[in-house]
Length: 89
Image (tube, rainbow, N blue to C red; front, side):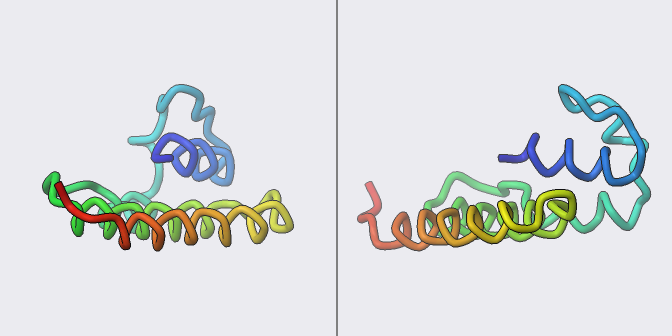
């Protein structure tokens, strides 16, 4: 998931973003907007929080394919919510 929004952000800013290259060349405000998608611990609640943030980042960066983004967003959010109902190990 993370590489998806990185590639989209690079494309939106005219950078070649394949395989995570040039990600560090994005404007600071763009990089900061992705900070919440980083996982801070392996606790299930934290993983779900980071997933929700990554979905939001992907949605923000998907300006090239808005119809697809809307369709996929619902499925991704459903995935994030269904994982919330899974019991912790």
